[in-house]
Image (cartoon, rainbow, N blue to C red; front, top):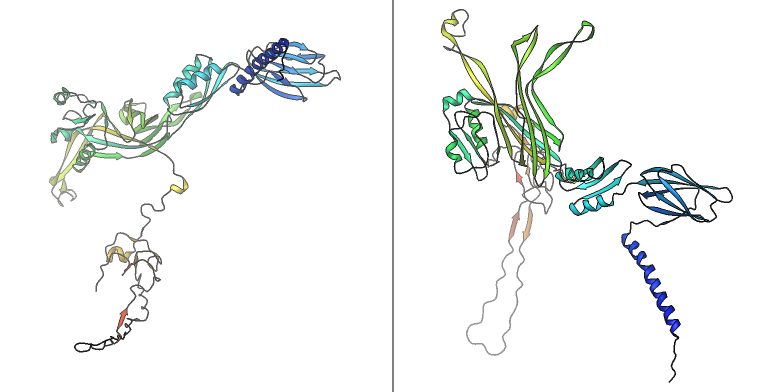
Length: 541
């Protein structure tokens, strides 16, 4: 048996070498885990190069030849420290942009453009921890920071900006909100006569689990909110005028308004539909403009036009999860001659400003803008009251004061655009056509199917028949089909037979069956279809 022994010095050197390898491998592994950490050594191998550094960090510039001379354009941003004949350490002091020039022994110049950015790693880690569902990138500048990326909720943007302002004096917000940010506003503006409501004496209430809308003689809209045990008894005592509330889509409120319209108590003045994005205002005006003289320089006057009528401004803000915040600013103005000054007309204005948080599809009702109107009603004997001169004895005019309250209902809905493949092929009115005079006055048709002159398309189910005097083509010739006759089989019985012999089978004569085609215009195998005139005429047989 042969045994090999190693000296103790060899084992010591081997252990020290392994320890050095382990220590050297640890920083390399950490650098590999970080991934984004740049290398400390920067090789200068081109006449012009570019380098990005972070504040309070350093790099080592290495050149193939000796560096007899080095220069930095702005010493306040960078500090140069020579380490070896061909190595220089560059330390970043402040954010900014500068250049470093290096000369070699042959006189060649190497220029490195250095961009120094702030240290935003702490803010980046904080945002990734607090907003895990968001993707926000932090890019520090000289005295500000740029935030870019996407968030899942709009309210997260304000909190991210507030956190960034604790680190930097100025924050540039380039964050976008994912999801649907387009809002469609369905607006209805009613004029409800409070005077006629008092005559009717209607008291009603629509009560749900999370809302209620009530009506008393005192106002168009009662208080809206969460119903409590003592609220039902206090509804009748409410005398407030300016009210607003959130109404669900399944309430009887719209049915009540329609009943008021049928009885000439409420009037729908406008029904616009507006589309805007989150945070952008939208408005509409139902009225007109009045020219007003405005004094200008050198004693001259100019003409300006001022709007009057019903104006409503909206600002929807999407909050996420189907919730949104809606700001509404209604204004009602009218020209009042009693307020005129030197021929310039005056205006009587009523406005309100309110905001509410609601869900998509709910309706916000706002009332309380009241105005008084004097209405004149003419009554008289028919025919006689319209006669000149003597007709005044058979008619009379009645002036009445009518107190009108403005009711504005806004229904916001989140909408998005359709892709080309999602656009429906059919739309309202695409399957109907315009009737002619004969169909309108003679047959009483309001609309007719939009079919080609020959009827429905070939092979498609539909109504096929004459159109504008055309006749049905004659059918095909009769097709005769004969049933097969069963073959006669002769049977022989072996052995003795007892009793009479069986009768011979009788051959049946061939029969014919006539089959007529039900549709002459459709090929074989097509789906069945109706035959008859185009339109809504009844088929007569």
